[in-house]
Image 1: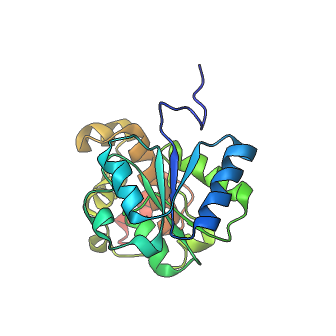
Image 2: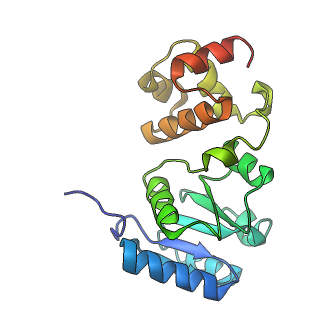
Length: 203
C-alpha cells in the first residue's frame, strides 16, 4: 500500500512560527487542499512540549526567528528533518541548507502549490532549495564543506556507486541520494560524471 503525505505513521508536519495567523492559515490550506497533515505551533514552548512528549513528527518547518533558541540548540534536529521558514531568500539561508544543517528552505511568500510540493519532497528524504537560491552563495572549497559531504564527493570522484558510498560511510540510501543532489546543484553540474571531473580538477 502506497504511503501518503498524511500517513499518521510518518508524523505530522509541524509549522513553527510566532506568527499564528500565518502558520494556522498555511496548515489549514495544506490539510484541506493538499492532504498534508500539517499542524501549527506558535511558540518555542509549545514545540518544546511536543518534543518532550516524544510525539513523532515527519518534518519541522521552523521560522528562522527561532534559530539559536534553547529548543533548537537542545537537540531539535534528532531524527526529524528540519527546514527553514524565512521572510525572504538570502545567501545565508541557502548556505545553511547546502552545508547540511537543514533539509530545505521556504519563504513565507512561496506559492502554496510550490510549498506543498517542496514539503512532499522533504518528507520523502529529499533536500529542497530553489535553483536560483542554491546559486546565491559562492561554491565553497572542499575543506569548507561538511565532512560527510566532502567524503561523498571524494567517493564519487573515485568512481564509487551509491550503494558503495552507503556501505563505506554507513549512510541510508535516501541520505546519500539527497546529498548527491545537493552537490550537483552546488557545483552547477548535471550529473555524477561532471561532478567527478570538477572534483578531481579541484572545483
